[in-house]
Length: 318
Image (cartoon, rainbow, N blue to C red; front, side, top):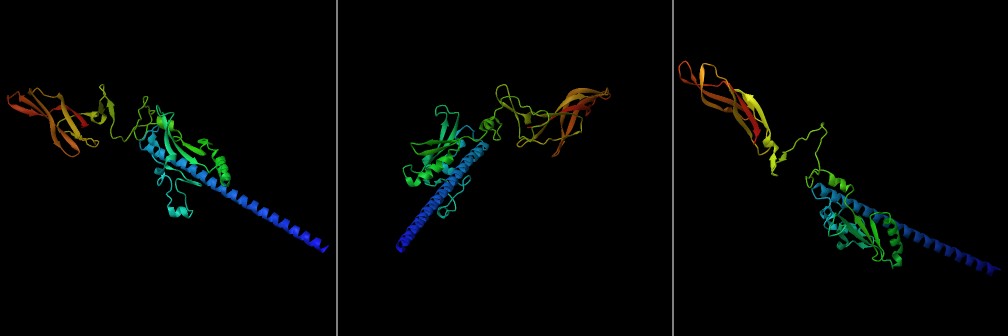
C-alpha cells in the first residue's frame, strides 16, 4: 500500500513537472513571438517614416526649382537622405541599441543597389519617375525565422505602395511623387521654373501684384521690353518749377526730358526762333526746369531773352 502511494506521488510530481515545463515553453514561445512582432512593427514604422522623408526630400527639391516629373526630384542614392532627412546613427550608438542605421533591417542591411529611381511608364517615353526601395525578407527556408517573415509580410501587406515577390523573397516599396504632384505642376512655382501661364491671370480686381523687381512685355519680334524703363510720368511745368526725382529700381537712374509745350509772347516782342528748355539746377532729389526764349524787343530792335511759356516734363527711370 505504501509502495502504491509512493509511486502515485512520483507520477503526480512528474505530471506537475511536465506541465510546468510545457507552460514555461509556451510562455517562452509567446514572449518570443511578442518580441518578433514588436521588432517587425518597429521596422514597419521606420519604413513608413522613410517613405515620408523621401516625400520631404522631393518637396524640398521641388521648392528649389526641380521639376516634379523629373528623376532629380528623388535622391541619387539612398544614403543622401542621411543627415537632413534620416537621423545619423553612429556604430557605437547602433551597437548599444540606441538607434538604427538608415539602411538597417532586423535581418541585415539594404544594399546600395536595392535603391533605384525608375521611369514611368517606361524608359523610352517617361511621363514621370518614382523611387523603389527593395527589402529582402528573412530566409523562407529557415524555420527559426519563419514567424519573423510571416509577421513582416502581414504588416507590410497593409501598404498600397508595396509589391511582394515570392520567388525573390523581397518586398519592394514604391515611392511615388509627393501627394498632389499634379496640382504642384499646375501651380505657378515660386522658383519660376516651367511655370508658363495657360491663360490670362485675373486677380479679381481686389488685389495687386506688388513688390516686383521688374516686369517685361513681349514685343512683336519676341524680344522683351522692361516695364520699368517704359513707365513715364508727364508733367506741365514753367520756368523755375521743381520736379521730384522718382525712386528707381536697382541699376537704373532718374531721367528728365523737357520739351516745349507753349510759348507765351506779348506784342512787345518778336520771336526770333530760338527756344531752349533746359535743366536750370539739380539736387539729389529734384530738378529745376528752365526755359529760354530769344526774342527782339519791338520798340528798340534789341535782342532779349524771356522765360514765359509752358514745358512738358517726361520723367522716367533708365
